[in-house]
Image (cartoon, rainbow, N blue to C red; front, side, top):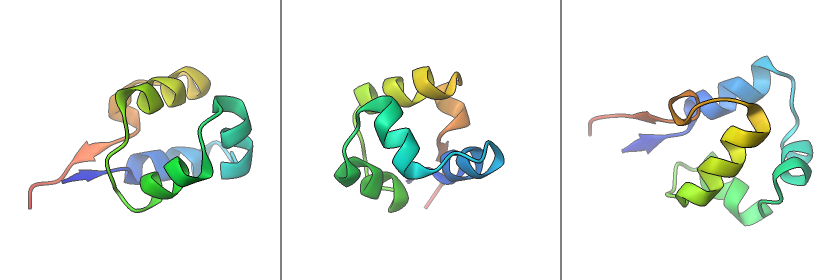
Length: 66
């Protein structure tokens, strides 16, 4: 399973509000909801997040063995 817990922690650590991130990246609120519930999102979304947050994909997600 893919978990976006590192993404959530990154936002908290950098004090970035989700609404601000939506504006920065242009991703939809539906996509943000997917990130909050550990649903799959496209690599395009990951790319936009990495660009906006100046980080690597590994900073946003982790693999958890079921």
